[in-house]
Image 1 (cartoon, helix red, strand yellow):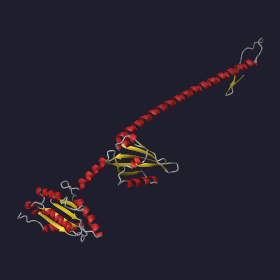
Image 2 (cartoon, one colour; image 1 turned 90 degrees about the vertical axis):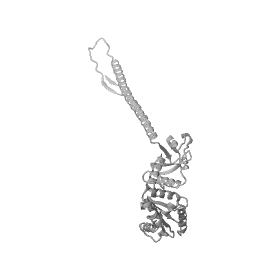
Image 3 (tube, rainbow, N blue to C red; image 1 turned 90 degrees about the horizontal axis):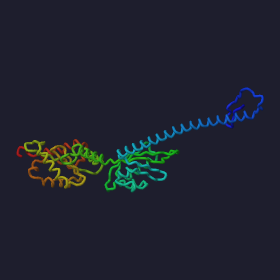
Image 4 (spheres, rainbow, N blue to C red; image 1 turned 120 degrees about the horizontal axis):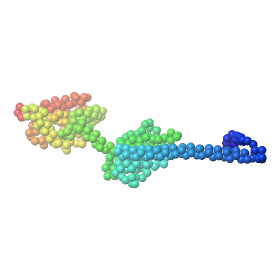
Length: 350
C-alpha cells in the first residue's frame, strides 16, 4: 500500500501474513493504515524540524545576548576612554544643520549639557573674534572637499568669560553622491600646553634677569628692521650700553646687577615699538625706531642722566644714529660696539 501525504511520499507499506479464508478481504482497511502511517511520519518530521529550529533560535538568541553584552562593554569602555581623554565630541548633520554635542563638550566649556542647543552657533559664536575668520575659512574648505581631516587651534569663550585654547580635529562623511553629509569632530582643551609653550618660548628668547629679548632674539629683530629700512623710508638708531666694573672686570656680578637695574629704568621712557635687548651680562642694546633718530636718542640720554653717578661713570654708550647705510647686522653691531670703546670710562681712574 502507498504511504503518502499531501507533503511527502514516504514509500510503500507491505502487509504480509496468512490469509484467513473466512475473513472478507478489505483493501480500504490497509489504505487507512497507510494514511495513518503517513500522518505519523509527517508529524515526526515536523517535530524534528521544530526541535532543530528551536535549537537554532536558541543559539541565535545566545549569540545576540553575547553581542549586546559585548556592545555594552565596548560602549562603556569608549565612554571611559573619552572621559579620560577629556575630548568634546560633536556630530554635525550638514543637511539639517543640527549638531549633537557630547556632554564632555559642554563640560570643557564650563556648561551643563542641558544648556547647549543643537545649533552650530553654540560653538562658532563663542570663538574669539580674531579667530572667527580662520575658523570659518577652514570649515568652508573642509565642506568644499578639502583632502584629509581638518586640524587647527583657536580660542573659545569659556562659561567663566575667559578664552581658552582649543584644538579642533574633524572630518567629513560623504553621502552616496559623494557630497559631505556630516562633519564629525572633537574639541580638546590645550590651554595648559599653550601656556607651557609660551613660557618655554619666553625662556628661550628672553633674558631671565631683565625680561628683555636675549642676544639671539634681539639680533633677529634687528635683521627684520634693517631689511624694512632698506626697502622703505623708515630709519632707526642703534645704541649699545656697556657697564664696566672696577678694574675693568666687565663680567663680574656688580656689572650684571647694574645692567639689570638699567634695564628696568628703560621700560617706561622708550616709545612703544623700540626694542631693548641684552647682548651680554654687561651689555644692553637699544633699537630706537624714531626717524630722525634724535628724539629716541634724547629720551635715552634723559634716562641715562637719571642713573646714579657711580653707574653713569662706568657706563659706555655707543650710538649709531642711522642704520640705513648698513647692509649687514654684524657690521652695524660692530660699529655700535666700536663707539662704546670710544666712550669707555677710564678704568685706571675709576
